[in-house]
Length: 356
Ligand code: HEC
Ligand code: HEC
Ligand code: HEC
Ligand code: HEC
Ligand code: HEC
Figure 1: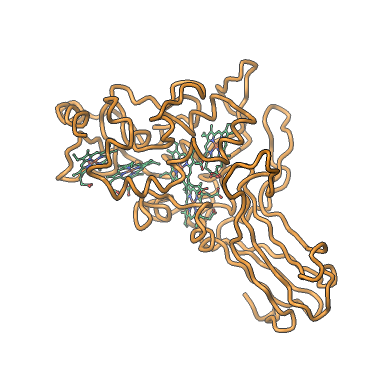
Figure 2: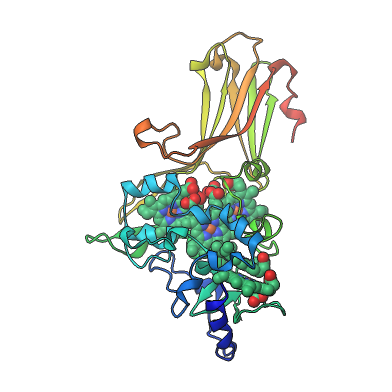
């Protein structure tokens, strides 16, 4: 395991010279594959780090970064739109199209993608007992660093299927949402919440129920005797809820079990329309900004059922455009997840005037 890193150690003096790398420019936002340069082949795989960083390796293995190429939701969408462009972020070590994804590139966003260039370890600090040739890179792990993959626009897809430039219409807008929020000065930026402690390299997000419940509060109150008000507050996310992939959305629902067909529903997310130049632009955006609250009033009679019957309220996070895909195009992993589920008796709800 020490082979490649031993070689790197031999290059210590070279690394100390500095390279002018910065966290903001390490990643190309999908315009090119990640080029590890003169990094030893053995160090490209996460397996090279396992012996000495077992905890970090275990956290990363449980992260979405580790399944960025292999997960069923991505693979299904990629089959529909198999652009080399997708490969550059979801299997960044592959030099070309899907056929160039070898076993190491299939590790997705692995240790080497984030930490290694030309055999040099890139990090935010260099421990005294570290065996690595380490370059301390300014802005390593900053919002701009994450933005190298997490902030980008709809691309111009050329006739040959290549992507060489972007439109001005954001496809993933996570860093801009963060910069516009009251969280923008949080120590560590994205890592202040997703950071290396306590969740470490697991980078929990929308596939983590605890993170979702921490992000979204659901409130129900009585707006007079015949109407209930539902409110969702984005208390915990440092960006919009939802953020990220364009298909992400939440469904807020209310229904009575004796009249399930008369359910009430609201969509929380972005809906798009074709843009004049290329790609798509936002038509409606009901995503909830950080620390904001969205409210809906639901007349009880719209739900049908008995006047004194309890009401079920559910907030559900949906990972794909089709919440309930057909068997034929099912990605083989959950396509949605209930964040909050509650049964309320309308006559016992607090009046909305008394709730924040
Ligand atoms: C021979 C044992 C060993 C191997 C193999 C190893 N590391 Fe380390 N690494 C260490 C030690 C010891 C430290 C310093 C203490 C710590 O942070 O855990 C360290 C520190 C680091 C740091 C912080 C920067 C620094 O220099 O202090 C990073 C980043 C890192 N390792 C990444 C990796 C990656 C990525 C791999 C696999 C490509 C890897 N390490 C393989 C032992 C190892
Ligand atoms: C998505 C990018 C990303 C991936 C993938 C990644 N790291 Fe890191 N790693 C970081 C960032 C950012 C920091 C700096 C955290 C900070 O400054 O608080 C870091 C810090 C570290 C450190 C320093 C100690 C610590 O935990 O802060 C070690 C060691 C390390 N990483 C090892 C690894 C290993 C081993 C893997 C693969 C199993 C890996 N990393 C995968 C981004 C990544
Ligand atoms: C090399 C590109 C790359 C970099 C750099 C990167 N990410 Fe990611 N990240 C991805 C991809 C691709 C996914 C989606 C994986 C998948 O298909 O589910 C992802 C997923 C995530 C998720 C999980 C989302 C979910 O739905 O649960 C979080 C949280 C996250 N990244 C945070 C970060 C943070 C914070 C940083 C900066 C420290 C960072 N990432 C750096 C590419 C990257
Ligand atoms: C104030 C805490 C906080 C900060 C700061 C923060 N996040 Fe998050 N993030 C969360 C929580 C909580 C979730 C889970 C709920 C959700 O999915 O929105 C999340 C979810 C995510 C997801 C998956 C969500 C999705 O809906 O697709 C990604 C990707 C992500 N964060 C990336 C980032 C990046 C990149 C930054 C920095 C620009 C960042 N986060 C800053 C708390 C934070
Ligand atoms: C510039 C980098 C980049 C490019 C290019 C890119 N993605 Fe992503 N993708 C991400 C990041 C970052 C996330 C994580 C945000 C989130 O989870 O919502 C993600 C998430 C996803 C998800 C959600 C996965 C999950 O775990 O729920 C799907 C599906 C997806 N991408 C498909 C694609 C397809 C198909 C393409 C090409 C048409 C593509 N992506 C191109 C960066 C990229």
